[in-house]
Length: 423
Image (tube, rainbow, N blue to C red; front, side, top):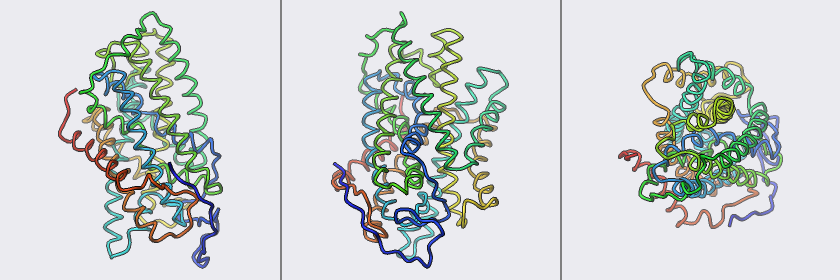
């Protein structure tokens, strides 16, 4: 199990300290904004509950509910481990930074800092762009179902509240995520109970299991808990209470797993596997009639919005650090980072050449390798440098067998996705 130890006050060179510090952290380009434990937890829940949770039943439809449940548990366990690696890295780093900044901080020895930073920037862009595009595409499908205006116009409508909250920063996103996630949790439980009470609900469908089809759902399963890029935001928000950070991570991912298990059970029990749609609430809602269809898809729209808020916030932080801006508070720096974050998704939505499922699979397969595997060498270097004494260490979770298992799992999922899989 992870081990904790009491914090010791690290020696800091205050000559290069920023004006603000908290619990031994020094403020850099990304500002320290206080979040409550609940807001930090809901930042993770909201970030995970969107496109992937809505598409996992479709990706796992052939394997059945046991397949969806096993994929959810397996990917969540590996995800918790990789999240905690990043937690320890952050707690050994004086300035809370995003993933690109961590690469610059800890991999600069040997004269290859620029190459490492460029690599991380390119790879995180390769995750952020398909992720954000998937959220916009999924939201556009739902808006277009409500009000047929075409996918491009619907995507732009989705971007208005999506971009507005992200522009306001970490605190606004944390508050929005808290309320959005609470509403989604209540709605999900309500819809699941309603589903189980319907005459069409057949518990026998939940027993249908095709183990050989599970692998096809792995990339989407990985995406359901792929919130590693939000760990730096959680650390920034809880820098005043660093011992709460691992707790926030584990609670957030546990809630997300609960959502997945309940959500998939409701879908698989209510519908035959061949009737499940790519954005699953579209077919789920149709089974209830128009009023419930509207309510279910409103929930889905909120889920996609909360995921967009969290992912775009993390992506903006990476852009700010990749471009070497001095402060996210600068209007010019913020505008450039904001445009670089949002513009690629707008372009891809206008192109209309890719579909929702493709974006989720690409982001999940690539993201698993980048966000789960690359933290291993960074943590090794962070332990050698040890800028500050961490309040949490991974202990046996960072042992060589666990590291090997993590690499094999995520690289294997990427290889499987690259070679293609039959649905």
